[in-house]
Length: 263
Image (cartoon, rainbow, N blue to C red; front, side, top):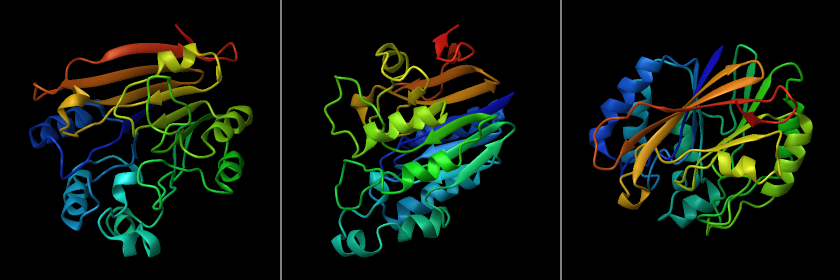
């Protein structure tokens, strides 16, 4: 069994400081094999915010995969956004914007979907879909992680990332089983599966782990327990008026039939 923990939208600089230690404590308690952080580590890509996020990550004794979100690109420095948009991210979080992780028979491939020239909307760059397809393990469980979702529900009022629909169709055909994303600060999983559009991909859109925006209602993260064709999804939530995480909400899924279904 492999345990993958998904964090996203930490937003250091506009985060719930009181929840930082409870989050670290819960992560240590869960003992994941790998932690995937899908962007927006900072709120405004300021150096002090990156340093604070780096300090948080350094307190986690688990292998990490980090990729940028739109908030990790300088907003108030147009010159930096144009010529070296990811310089700060690379300096604090590592040289690769598209790391690859592996634990047991689970392979995690990442996409940098942040577009420095469009503040909110993401994009899938030319060649990225083919790169991911080339890294798919035909004998294992394949996860793709990125900041921007590849499918959105009708209630979402943000523009879908460019080439997201093409990417999802091609990745599903190539044998990608799970997609992890953030960006929306809204949880979505069952409703995406119920659309019936991509039954072979379990899309998990996780809400913000630490952002202090009251309208988000709660902070959360997800732990996946993967055992062959079966996945248990543990959703850990902390309401905005609480300073600790509740007992997880647990759902089990299987793709033994060739498509994902709740068990």
